[in-house]
Length: 115
Image (cartoon, rainbow, N blue to C red; front, side, top):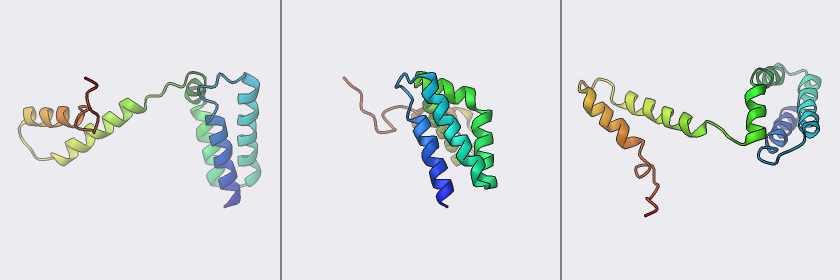
């Protein structure tokens, strides 16, 4: 359990470098520490996590360097799919479109217009 917690903390330390304009050597050191801890643990779950990080490394590195994510669009897509599941069986596509549009507006999600 401790090994998994430490690996998680190492990964969070790596991701915390986002928007800090960290030097490549700092990023490499934290990545190595994460990989090293995962490999030394001998746990298949941590080895799988390290493999997943390796597979997605270019996208993770882009996030660390730029601080830009696609979280907003992913959240909107999840909301659209949830609304579509809730309306399963409805026969009017126009109503479905309006339900989706209403659910994804800023006001319906709790945001107020700045004006």
